[in-house]
Amino acid sequence: MSIENQNDNEIDNGPDWQEDRRLKAWRLKGEGWSQRQIANELGVTEGAVSQWIKRARDGGIESLRSRHRRSRSRGLSEKQLIHMAECLEFGAKAFGFPDDNWDKDRFLWLLENKFGVDLASVDSYFA
Image (cartoon, rainbow, N blue to C red; front, side, top):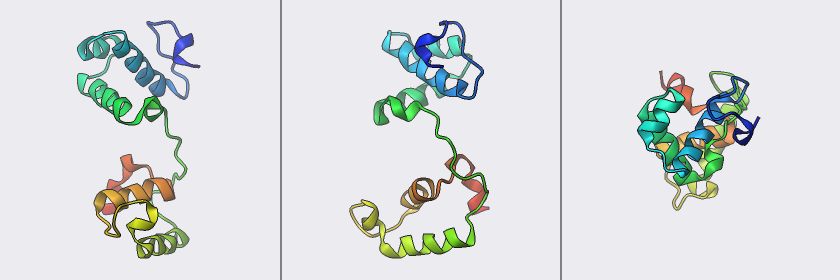
């Protein structure tokens, strides 16, 4: 169900209800609502609204859409670990970065974009 088809006072509790809430926040911001008003309307913190608005400004409305996890495991398989080592050997430049150095942010990008790791649970990789 898209946000446009919903009653303005309701957020569907279907599988993408969180996405609908983020999209509604973006729409309300576009209508001139303050972040505080949006937070009160949606029952979330101003901080959450602020993050959603920043994400949409930086990455477009698509960045507010749900990312369906490609991997449910808490770690990489042996095959994936071997592939990860190969990717690291290629260097960061092979993945579009300006140089071959790997830092934490680039490594996390690789985990998310090449291996489908949900970064919300990334702490389990470093525990």
